[in-house]
Image (cartoon, rainbow, N blue to C red; front, side, top):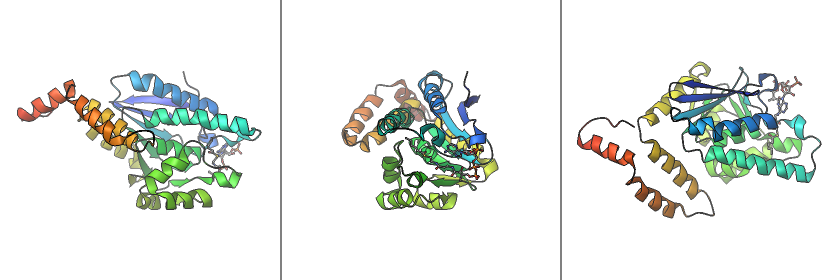
Length: 256
Ligand code: HXC
């Protein structure tokens, strides 16, 4: 069904792999369309899927950026249209109601790092290298990276990375708060899955509400506190609230 990605359902986790290792998994339009389709359809609708891990095929790269060869002849209007469309795709990932982890298994550069930034969490293997090298091409990040990197690591570090175009390694990215955890390459999937499994024991409705409200607080057009009040109140009407509190009173584990 897809040419550039594969999706494997392993227990309750969907592993989405970008499969263009010859091009270091660079995001051409078709690949990003396929990722968008997956998140809008099966990953969203399949109730058996409780979380998603995104990674890149091969030993070398998560994603080495947007596919440079596709936009070398773009006009200003075409460039803006690419960024606008890309924002839509990245926002659907950012707002996705189930937890998503980027398993960064090598280069995560430009649009590749921006994809990782749109995920809810990032785990890097020790060989990972991260950077926003767009200034080297006479560009700036265009898939939300200027905003999401600054909100994650602060303005100073974000500007350093964006203006230098230099890569940082996994340990430095961890010190910066850019990645949640660092692990051996062979343990990367298990580390991500272990993180997700702890979340599967919790209320999926509460997790979806938490994603929505935390994101709202970082959205200048929204009042995060108001969103929290609303979502907190709505939680009381959910079957998950009934199950969670019943389980507590009965001194048993909740079953979500
Ligand atoms: C297209 C890419 C690519 C990319 C790598 N390749 N990155 N093709 N777009 N972003 C291709 C190479 O052309 C090459 O294909 C093959 O993958 C292997 O790459 P090599 O360069 O031979 O590998 P290596 O020498 O190991 O160098 C690895 C690298 C380098 C340091 C990661 O590939 C690199 O600098 N890539 C570009 C990184 C980058 O600038 N990313 C940001 C893109 S702009 P062939 O056919 O020659 O074998 C961006 C904007 C986002 O992301 C916003 C859009 C709105």
